[in-house]
Length: 317
Image (cartoon, rainbow, N blue to C red; front, side, top):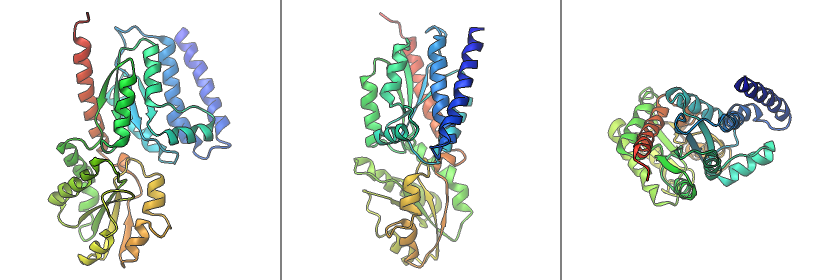
């Protein structure tokens, strides 16, 4: 009866949040589908207080975050994770302070950082958690995530970013193969974020792996920082291609995709390619909506849970 009352109360609050926020937040429905359910899970999880013996290791999905309609991608990922890891509580955390601040300003409701989520779990008696990085590469944001985890009182077991091992690159090629092979006469331009972290060389590795698989019609560019990509439109045209398909190598097709890839600014990838006389096709969703991509994330969660189980089985002094 107590459990029923808790869920009834939460359902009423959730309905209220859905009704109250849609009037002033354009992405409120998606926000309510992803952020608020995470809060509901937190409240149920903390209110019921299962014993440590019965509690499955919590899973914290740590993403950069977005304030766009791309929240639907996060919802899809969460559904797949919950299905594959039934019984494990799932929480969201965002590593971008800017995104957390914007979400709070737009909705009036808090958006949690990884450390805040981990502190809440520790306060409720959890001893360990799996923190799954949803970053594409182990760059600045991922290392900031590691720093926050080291500050936590919990034993934190990290699920590695999407592209971490050679197998991950091969799996990504498998995911994108249908999009690439169905366009045999087009150049394929994979567009990532870019970085000034030393991991920027991973974009060259990505190009090498994909060219080995699909041939020399593969090109890799970024929207900012490294590797330098300004000459790529001219290189595609010089190679004799008349058409190019842009595939975002971004988890979500959010702000960078809308502004820097298909935007109307002078330096958008779309206009730079068109100035070379190229006919441009756009894949309009990020990697998170590509069939099979979530399997990489799930594999990394499995590896982290394996480490967590080994740690938990060690005798305590």
